[in-house]
Image (tube, rainbow, N blue to C red; front, side):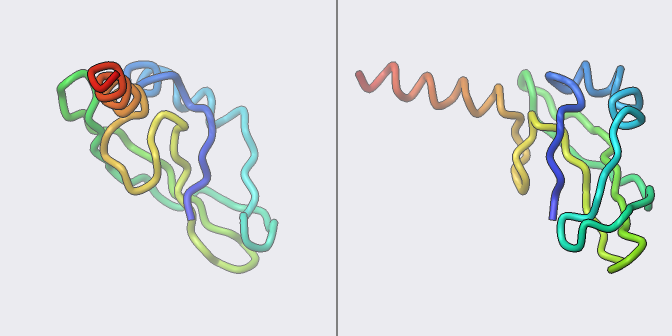
Length: 99
């Protein structure tokens, strides 16, 4: 289950400041509310500004129920590869051209 939080407004800001944002937050397990610790980093591809970018996302593990969760920046939807600004632009273009 992904945990979605603010880690920057876009891929560029995420790459520059994600460690600062992560250090400022404490995460708890969404299933049992137990404490968590950093488990591993996972590479994730995101399409933004017409280019495929690679970012690293943190996976955390609960110390009580041992489930793992990924920490996603809020500009990425779970199970999607396009950033929210790209999706928003596409929807806006469809709505404007149809009206």
